[in-house]
Image (cartoon, rainbow, N blue to C red; front, top):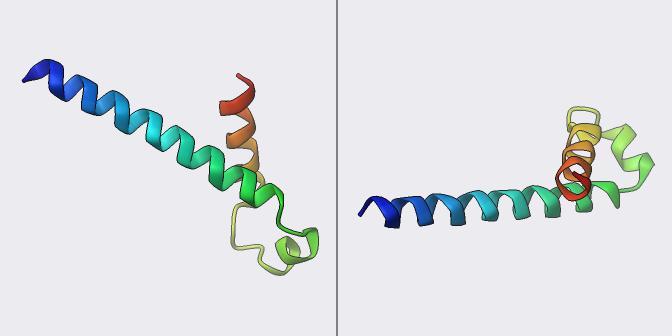
Length: 56
């Protein structure tokens, strides 16, 4: 049972990393004008996190 939980945790971790990559990539494609008009969204943080994950 313990090994199964470890595998499930690894799959979840990989899925979360992929999700963060997708969100960060999408954020980087949002127009600058839209980003400026929606400052409550942490655009730079999303993009920077994606870059750290992909290029680290």
